[in-house]
Length: 283
View 1 (cartoon, rainbow, N blue to C red):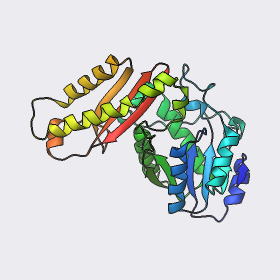
View 2: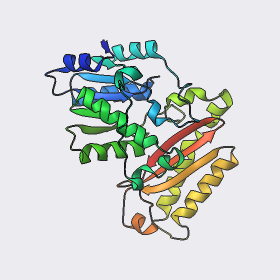
View 3: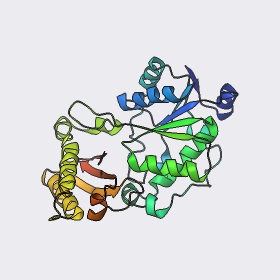
């Protein structure tokens, strides 16, 4: 595996490779990331991964400085997966001049849910992803469905800018107890890690209640959301949101859309102690 930090060197190595598949990451790799590498291999060759902790998508009180950085372990994992190039730029490599041009997603998609609780997050994500696409120039790029809103925003960005990149979604990989794999899971204490699978359990309960609405309309979707938030809060969580939305555009769902068979998704973000976890479940 070639480890490259310079943009021009990366382009030189990829010259003539018009079927490259790309998996951007922030490192601290786990099985979820590695599953994306395997999916990328199914859709293109060679496989290029990147590791870059993107300062632009962290808020002033978020964990940029403490975000886990495990480069040597990450390199070993990527080598085992047969990744051809690891693009691991420094901030000076990727931003040799201050990045004054930014990509700002539309408010109706970028300022809701995660965008509401992490202002500027998706602007930082879109800007770095567009720049990484420019550096790698892949045929396909793979993103995990755990970051559901991010996947949708990047897919729409690629379409609106007419980028020659196909966005491939990868399914969420979970631990045996149901917790979605995440680099931030390492922040959890032993007791918090034992409680963390409750997040997916609540999502499953919400899905069952929503599906029951097809047979009766005694409860509204908004009431189901409120009950779920209260359930998590009662267990000591600090929920930011539990939202039932349309899969197509993440607009709020209605009972009428459910009755009509509209595909829905439940999205959640909640703090357990000091660790903020996100998850989702499609209906």
